[in-house]
Amino acid sequence: MTGFRRGVRLGVDVGKARVGVARCDPDGMLAVPVETVPRDDRSIARLVELAAEHEPVEIVVGLPLNMRGDDTPSTQDARDFAAELATAQAAPVRMVDERLSTVSAHTALRQSGRSQKGSRSIVDQVAAVVLLQHAVDTEKQTGVPPGIAVRTGLE
Image (cartoon, rainbow, N blue to C red; front, top):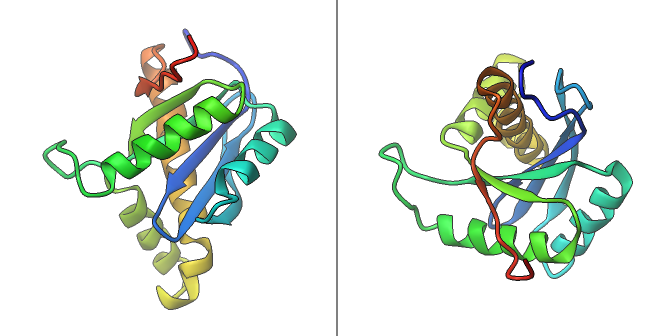
């Protein structure tokens, strides 16, 4: 684990209707689902509460890009959400490429015997787990924090 920064992290998968949240243990061994937060006026406030509860060293927010690495219609929405989250609480926020995280989540749920319709309530959490585990594994392999730091304008 050369260069791995020890500490709990939260993973956030931002969607139009729901926000999936996951966390990992301080050693980054395992990311687990935490909660699906409805996407509304209280979304950021709920994530601030979760950050206060879990005391993460950072929050990793998924950056939706297409397969070529270009922006999608959801990219700016996720960036705006991450910037608002970074301003609302103390933990640093990083945006990490989330290509295929939702696809991987649906595949994992299907393989576990769940239908797509029956998985709607948890697929966002599973996507957050996939995103967070990938970010932690990348940092462990490279020794470099993954993704891009979100600037709050306060620094």
